Length: 479
Ligand code: 6PG
Image 1 (cartoon, rainbow, N blue to C red):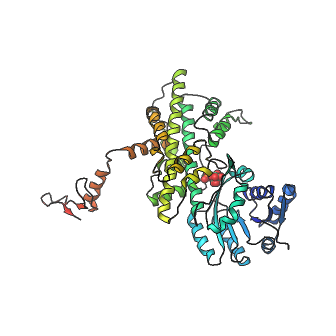
Image 2 (image 1 turned 180 degrees about the horizontal axis):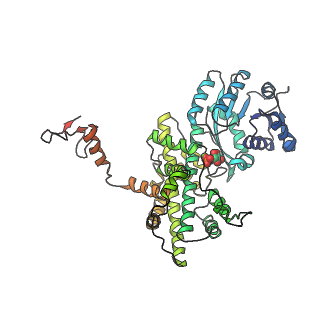
Image 3 (image 1 turned 60 degrees about the vertical axis):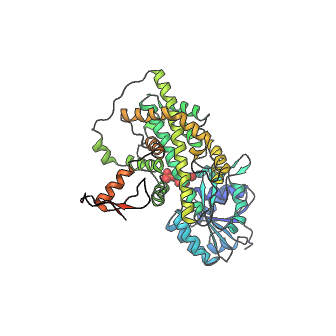
């Protein structure tokens, strides 16, 4: 077998197939393999004209067709399937070869796999790939971790096939071992928050301003011309404009209102809890999906009273729409800031030196959360790598300041009318929590010390203390 292929892709479901096509379209010779050989054959039959594919039905044939160092991209479902494919190929590879996992693997699994393959001298690269089927084919955002040596070989290929913004590739070396899959996971957490915030904005415009889905689609199209410009706003307008062919009703009204989730949002929240990182907007977005999928609980709650519906005049509806835009933008800034805070917090935990400006930069295109304001986030973090928060950056601080009144008005209106806005409210409360001069955490410390002698610190002197709550004459003791 002539070892001619620059890269091999195994796992030819839609994402794998489209990535293989993307590599081939850019002039790479691509070895292709799939557990079900028919899928390999149909790829070459249907798309063989797009470039040079080297089909292989057996693992050995697939490996033999690869130039050294061999580069194998695994595009199978995250979890045991990935381990199974790794086990199948490791015996066929040599030191210096590379295995890239392009699935949505948990970063802890990637760290485990990378360490295990190091013993064979094989580079294991966990690469987050964002942009769905269309992105895989026409230019995703690629977030590879793994060794610097592997990026020296793979980076130019990823940067060729990735999306490009202002001539810049949407791929960069994120950091060692699991850093790439971690950043992809955070991307998905931000995606959950962004989607939930958009959904809450839609719900408010629907229920409070009483606009139709088609009218709300136009509002989103208008917003998409401004600071909220993003892929998610764009597709939201498309979904809301869609009419159901069977019933002629707005399509959004015939979709069951129970959200699914494959797991990356859940992982983000679990990891945030482990890190002590206050990713409250991402958490509420994830819990909102869970709550929407609780039919029995929802049936039990449905008869209970809610808020008061007060019809709006058209001019009041227009004013409210402006307020919702402000609230959406402010909440979105908080959600993205919480995502970047997680990347800051994890870097300390695993010793990853992640370039936040570079991460924001490769999220400007190709990925699901691509948005105009990522340019500004990228610039802000690049200008000051020590930036603790976007709200420490003057322009973002000014925008959040300007959004104060409408943001609070929207959350209050939702509460008065009984409309759930868990993500809007979480973003606003997170803002107020971090802004507060004094938090009721002081009382929590007193409670904890009362029932568990868990001690507390004081504002007026160094040290850790315990009060003997049931012995009033006994002085406080230094713990
Ligand atoms: C991406 C998407 C993708 C995500 C699916 C399903 O970056 O292309 O984030 O990776 O996994 O869209 O996500 P959920 O089922 O968790 O919503």
